[in-house]
Length: 252
Image (tube, rainbow, N blue to C red):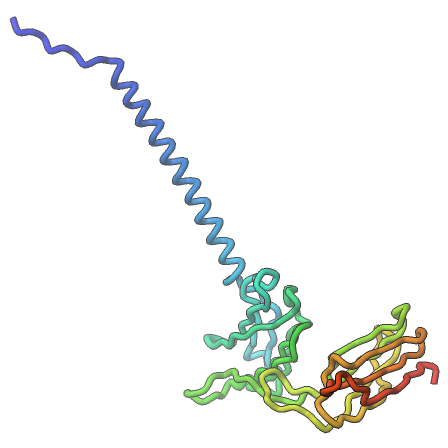
C-alpha cells in the first residue's frame, strides 16, 4: 500500500498569508501616504505658481472684445513681486507688479480703451513706478498685440509726510516716466502738495531743480498740525548740503 503523502503543515499557510498581508498593508499605507504628499505638493505649487485670479476684465466700448488681467499664483508673500498676465483671446503678455508682498486687486490695474481696437493698460504697485502697456488688436503678424509704452505720467508722489495728529499731509511729487523708460525729467520743479489728509490735494509749492537731488534728502519738520518746515539737501564731497528751504503754513 502506498504511503499517503504527508499533508503540509496546516499552520504554516495561514501564517504566511498573514505575513504577506501585513507587508501588503504596509505597502498600501506607504503608497497612500506618498500619494497624499505628492498631491499636496502639487496643489501647493499650483497655488503658488500657476493659479490664476482675475484682477480685472475690461470690455471694449462695443463689448466685442475683452482684456483680462490675472494674477498668476499667490507667491507675492513668499517670493516678492506678483506675476501678472494680460490676456486677449489666445495672446498674452506677462510682467510683474511689486506691491510690498500684498495680493493685487483692481486698484493695481486700470484699462482705458481709446476705441474698440486700442487700449492702455496701467499696472501700479506700492514699490514701483507704474508700467504702461499698449494694446492694439490690429497688430502686424510679426508684432505682439501688447507692448510696453514709455510715457510721461505727469507728477507722481514719491514721498509723504503727515502732521503730528495726522490731520494734514504733504506729498512730494516729481514728473515721472513709466517703468522701463530711460527718460528722466531734469528741468521740471519738484512740487510739494499739501492739504487735509484723505482729500484730493490741489495746493502746492514748487522747489526748483538745479541738479538730480536724491529724493532721500527731502526732510519735513512739523512745527504743529498746520505748519511744516521743509529742507532739501543733496550729497556733496563735503557731505549733505542744504539747497532749498521753505515753510508751508496751512492757514495762509
